Every structure is written in structure tokens, then in C-alpha cells.
Image (cartoon, rainbow, N blue to C red; front, side, top):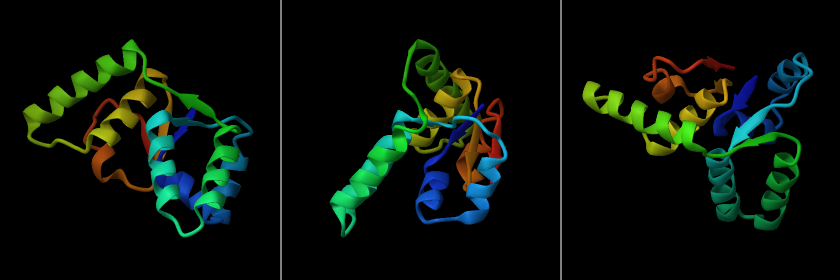
Length: 128
């Protein structure tokens, strides 16, 4: 039901207890996208303790459902990009890919940053 954006996962790693408590209420497996996973590993390899950061991500992604691109999500990416381009309100492609994956898989995208995601009118998104 829920797909976690990169900002949420980072806050989980930072020990946000209120966020963890909220997640526990749902008693379900959460999802992340392969794009989110790329962003997490990108940050891990920049960190001072690379090995620990990479291991943290490796352990984490084993506990969630991983959403990867298929024809439906790729089609939504193209459609949403076109809609946003016509409105003159493009967003970073990584965010558009994350949104398209959440939409294609009928997930609610959970984020801490609505700035870009709220521009996609058909996206079911919540700020936690």
C-alpha cells in the first residue's frame, strides 16, 4: 500500500522514532523503488563510513518490496513528463520515475518533500 521515498528512508536510518512508530501502526511490508535504492547507495558511497552505510542499505532493502520499472511505469513516466512539460513545471527525472513506479503499482507515495511530487495530480502522495 505504501511506497517510501528516499527522504523517508534516510530519516528511518537517522533514527526518527516518531516515523518508526507511525510505520508500525500499519503492520505491513512497505515498498521502495529501484530509483530510491540507487539514491541511497549513491549517498552511502559518499559517506565517511562507506562499508557501514552500504551494509545498512543492503539489510534494509531485504525487508521491503522493491518496485522496478516495467511497461506500465515507463508509460506513466512518459505521460507525466509530457503533462508537466506542457504545464512548464518539470521536476527532476528521478522524482518522476519514483512517482511513476508508485502510480503503476497502486501505492501511496510517502515523502517528507512534497515540492516536486505534488505537481503530479494523479499521484497519491502523503507527507509524513
